[in-house]
Every structure is written in C-alpha cells, then in structure tokens.
Image 1 (tube, rainbow, N blue to C red):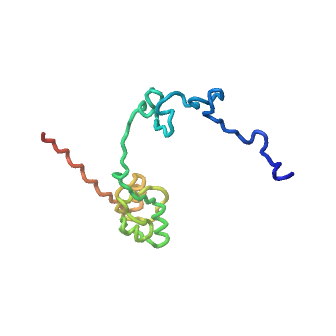
Image 2 (image 1 turned 30 degrees about the vertical axis):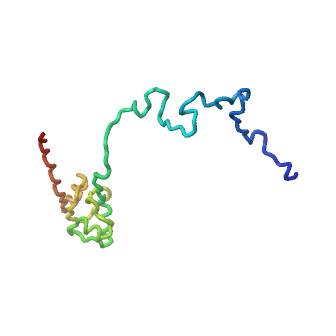
Image 3 (image 1 turned 120 degrees about the vertical axis):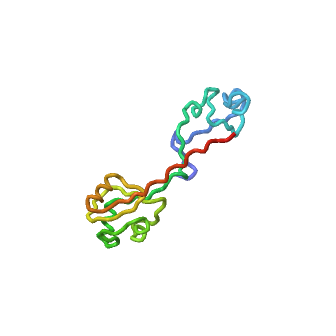
Length: 165
C-alpha cells in the first residue's frame, strides 16, 4: 500500500450538491431557494415565521409574572445542623440564637434576607431562636424541648393611595 493509493471507504465521503450550475442540473436557476424575496437571499431573519399561520409563540397563552430580583433570599437552617453545632461546641444549649450568631458559629456565611428554620434532623437541646420564618414542625420540635422560636411579624402592606386626576 502506498500513500497515493489510500482512499475513503465507499460511501464515507458525501459529495456536496453543486447548486446554480444550470437548469439541466436540477439545482439551477433558483438553486433550490424557491422564488424571489427575503428567503431567496442570504441572512434570512424570519425566526418563528410559519408561512402566514399564527406562530406558536403567539398561539400560546401568556400567563404569570415573576421577578427574581424582588424575591427574598432566605438562608435555610435545619434542626440537624443546629445539633451538629451544639455537639461541636460552636453553640451552647439554651443560648439566644439569631442570624449573627449562626454566622459567628460558622453555620452560615451570611444572613441574606433572613433565616428560615426547617425540621430536617433532630434537635436534642433547647435553644431560643430568632428567625425570619420557621416551619410548624420545626417550631413544635424546639418548643417540645423547652426552647422558643421567635418569628417577628411582617410589616403590613401600605394601603393603596387613591389616584387624583
């Protein structure tokens, strides 16, 4: 075998269709682009166009509205994580615990918009917690041990002002 005798397997190489080489070639005249107009040119910009049929993005209903930049970003702390901190000595049993104490103990990096207490895991020592929110199960578990969960009331929304015209 010599270098000049090497060639692809049969069918491995696809010969491109040569367009625009006369009507007799079958791909001449319009070169398989149809008639005139925008789609016969390069750089066609008809995203979503469905040949005059109402496009899918206009047929589907527009529902819902979410703005993530207005949503509060709470940090989640589970009861099991608090128990780990108690076992390691980062927290003391019966201590007053809020977001700043959790950061100091190394449980959280930062408080964000507040701390939410969830009931995953088991707590064995009483704690007095001040958090932005807590699940019912977490509150029950802490209070069963003699601890307390303080969730400050959210400020009421301001009443709408009547418009003056």
